[in-house]
Amino acid sequence: MRLLTPGDIRGLAERLGVRPSKRLGQNFVVEPGTVRRIAALAALEPGDVVLEVGPGLGSLTLALLEAGASRVVGIEIDRVLAAELPRTVAARAPDLADRVTVVAADALHVTEPDLAAVSAAPSVLVANLPYNVAVPVLLHLLAALPSLRRGLVMVQAEVADRMCAPPGSRVYGTPSVKLAWFAAARPAGPVPRSVFWPVPNVDSRLVAFTRRDPPDTAASREEVFAVVDAAFRQRRKTLRAALSGWAGSAPEAERLLRAAGLDPGARGEALDVAEFARLAAARKSAQKSAQKPAQESAQKPAQKPAQQSARQPAPPAAPRTI
Image (tube, rainbow, N blue to C red; front, top):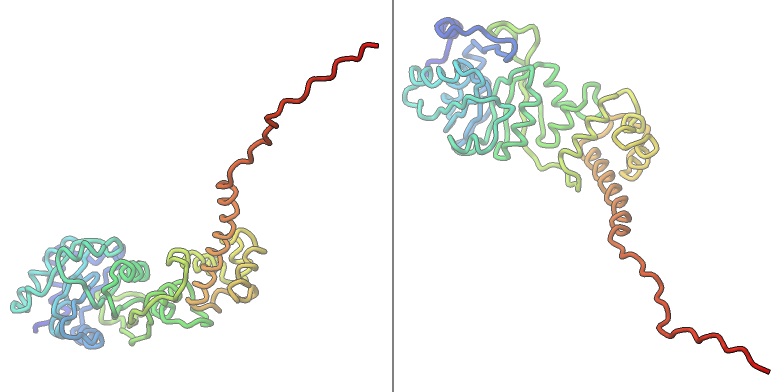
């Protein structure tokens, strides 16, 4: 397998008239040893269909084929790069070119039917995610593609810390809880700045994840995520205060927290995903209870007016004549 070298990547970009776009979060990995390490850490199994977001010029794509991917499906928003990638694979790995499919699309809007039209369902996500939308892309893909069972993604170091943080950590927050709804995440190692072109002004890290079942709750994912957003919108405040808008008032927030067995004086970073789910379920239960009397009142038949006696009153007695 002839992986791309720094010179190859710059030559390709020059021929295509491509300049790395900050808006699209394009920082291409140009060091062959790094993409080989990422492909090895992905621990691909026979039959794995790999989803790669932002394959760019193909550095990681080639390494994934070398590592044994049965198929690689690339989601590339840049249409020039999407058109060129199959040609690059055909030139460098002609025997494996039929294993690569490229979809020119925005990963934030990709759906299961979009991919079903071109490939078997992906089982593994391996990607150098665009740093400006890394968390939204990852959460969207986990929600939209239930076939994804595990993955390895490269993100900004600070984002990686938040994604893997446990409750109580200083950097634990919304990304930590929302990712925990879908999967267990762990750090998988640093990536030096020098392996990118252009060199970013931030450090990078790898995050590995394995899908798991969400907490058992009567609340929907959207309802749980709503309370998570509210709790961390003002993370310095106690939950009683931070959730007052979400609950309707501070006293109602306290009542719901106590109903869920949670301390109203705690802060959002103290709760794990199961506790947030319990709180969302408590609110849903309270809303159902409040709606029930109103529904019963609306369904209750109107009271009929009392019926008059069918017997007519007797006429007044005639005056007596003396």
